[in-house]
Length: 168
Image (tube, rainbow, N blue to C red; front, top):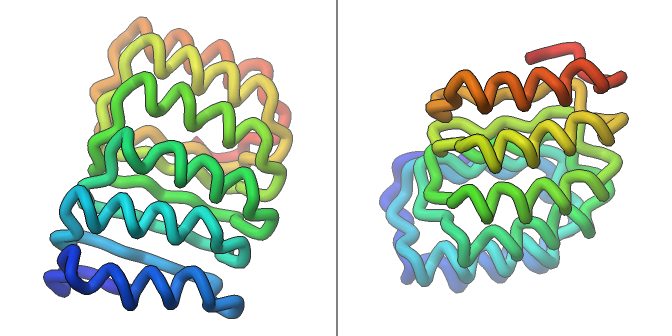
């Protein structure tokens, strides 16, 4: 767990090299550091090539649309990832929709958390489509996403069709 350590963009080179090359790393939690936009991009690109993580929590960072694709590719490539938590980042609705397409193709993730990132009706529709299709996601959390009534209705349609969800 690397939390509140003041990790900045200058520490990204050795951290990214470790993430790329480490085949035994199973749990990675990076929380409330000062990665900056450049550091975040390098970090997400390093994650893209790591295929052994079981649990990934990225919290309180500066992850944004520049990282969404690299994260999505990591989700697509990683066949062992069970838990993905994206908390208080800066993703846009279009990033979230793009990312759900990667989640649909991953058959190992059992828990997905998106917290502290606004989810509008369009993103809620994307999550609903994901929930209708997934057979592996058992825990799904949208906490602090400012989901409104229309978005909640969209999500409920996905939940009604879901056959794997047991925690919401």
